[in-house]
Amino acid sequence: MDDLSIERGKHTFKLGVNFRRDDVSDFTASEGSFPAIQSSMLDFANGSAGVIQQNFAIHNSQPLAFYSVGFYFQDEFRVNSKLKLTLALRADRNSGGTCQSDCVSRGNVPFDQLSHDATIPFNQMVATGISRILPNVERVVFEPRVGFAWSPLGDKTVIRGGIGLFSDLYPGQILDQFTTNFPQVTSFSLSSLGTIDASSNPNSAAALVAQCNTAFQNNFNSGGSVAGFLSAAPTGCATPNLNDVVGKLQNPKYAEWNLMVQHTIGKRTVLSVNYVGNHGYDELLENPYLNSFGFGGLPSTAADSRVQNVLQLTNNRRSNYNGVTAAVQEQLWHGFSGQFSYTFSHTLDNVSNGGIDPYSFNDSLLNQISPLSPTSLNYSNSDYDVRHSLNASYVWELPMKFENRALSTIAGGWTVSGTFFHRTGLPFSVVDGLTGANLVDGGTNLQNVTVLGQPIGAVPLSCDGASVNTACFSASQFASGSAVTTFGTIPRNSFRGPGFFNADLGLKKTFHFHERLAFTVGANAYNVFNHVNFANPISNLANSSNFGTIVSPVQPPTSPYGAFAAAATDARIVQVMGKITF
Image 1: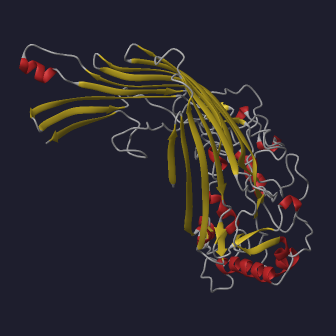
Image 2 (image 1 turned 135 degrees about the vertical axis):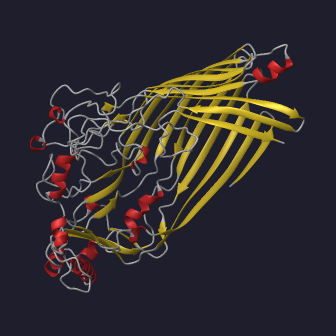
Image 3 (image 1 turned 180 degrees about the vertical axis):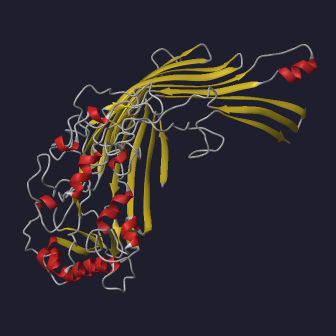
């Protein structure tokens, strides 16, 4: 990375370049390479395997590399003492990733352009031994930006604003989808076959599932078709899945804009109102329905019998955000400094957090929900859509002075500090896991299916005010699995969980014994009001015992144990501290 700045009269020119390259020894292909056996107690007692699943990789370690490079030019133009303009242009190039051992396997063309003739051999369906992972990534994204700062009434009032285009790099883990396609990595699962025994026993479950892989690899390398593979493999060996990508993958892009008015009252008080908006497009969304069939408007049969589930990476995601924040900041008023802000906002998208990793392990849905379109059930409140948010922080050096020196030493000079945080609840979806499980088991190529719960009566859309073991809704308010014929009737994230409140408080005082010797004593109270916050309710109809019920609290973001602590941090915790400075 390098930057250069040059001043010429009223102009300040800046230009720079940044380059980043990641080289990774990737072991994703080796995941699941040992047999995983699930057996009931009866199966185990009889020495038989209920279900066995195993992945087989040609190379367990894969050397991957990808890079991004960006250039920018910027001109800060001081038009006069009251107005400054900023004009900028940036260009970014993201690579498609490289496997340096040529481990990439993908369709010769995108799946929807592929010939689905079952007599065409596997090795003519996909190309192997490729180094470039994503075949046709958008080469360059040009991103113009403009901003201004205007002080029409002198230094007391400032109006700032701007608009620009920004791009993003795709998450690196999506490259794994194309280095773990068949034949580089295959996965097989067999049910109720073989004994729990060493793989050297030809009748064992481990030996049978290994024969699936041997039959497939031999068939692939010899130019065989799907019929040849199924006739040579043990009964129950299924055809593989396929990860696919659209013909040209675009870089995710975001148009962002803001307008802020800031006004200073006196010497210490600053008021501001800031509007921020953005529109995202060409974002990543995965479609799992290209080879699915038999439910919710899908074809009656699979498009291609050579593969099962096809997961296609697309640019069909979009997002929008609009928010207004009003804030007041006070500096050193009788020893008090603090800030308070309120934000009203709304954010919508097809999928949140980039569409690859979940924002919430319990509530996030990552794939396209309806096969009809990427917007019909997906485009709704984001996983992190918070409509109302209050935030405050303060530090107050108590202005207490006494004529008595001893009393002043003990009671004076204390500092009180704290934070305050409140927000409304986060969205979640009611998921019909019962129907989803039946579709997966029913052989409809829907391994990545999401079926939303379908309300049949008045269902509360908010669980605010509910507590642990309190039901927000019940299964009787949603269509039963036998009556479900669609992927859903209301969009994802149509429900809202409980709000969140937290406040911390600190108190400290420093005693000076010498110019270089001081002793500080104090206490910090985390969740000072001992307020309990609750998680979203169980929202999967497959969990019949707890469906619609809140079963756990939410931990506050701060505690003396640090982030991600598991030691009762949802309760009030007081920490006493002492510090010697010398």
